[in-house]
Length: 157
Image 1 (cartoon, one colour):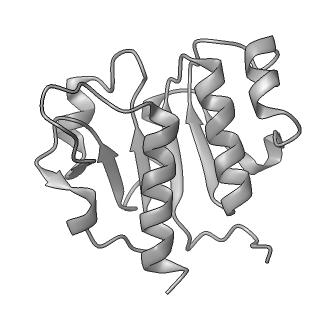
Image 2: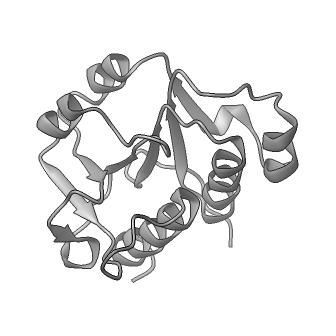
Image 3: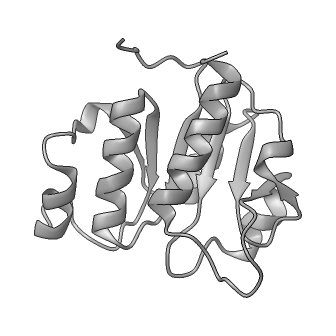
């Protein structure tokens, strides 16, 4: 089954990604599951980086990725659209949340998350529950978990 991107579907947004291998794996996941990816710059690497190209293989189609120069550009375009921030600082587990068509799910930078000002702007914040004393999952694993649940709710039912 193939799926064409729709404005009504969920979107994954990466804030200033800094590890090329993770971004490559996320591009592959989004491509395989028919989810639009948005990247908020600046990135911590070039799209010509060998580590990035090795992971992304032939799944990179820049037409399927929306690039934003800055977080301000991202928020300006999103305007009244719902943005959900995935963060270990959230109190609500993702599986208790009702995803909707058109949601954009934002993931922070691997090394630092998102700045506090973004936490203050975004109302909906979710986390993936983990064992105590564990810091975080790899971002590409986190993205896959959230895509699976959000698509289960809005597309696969």
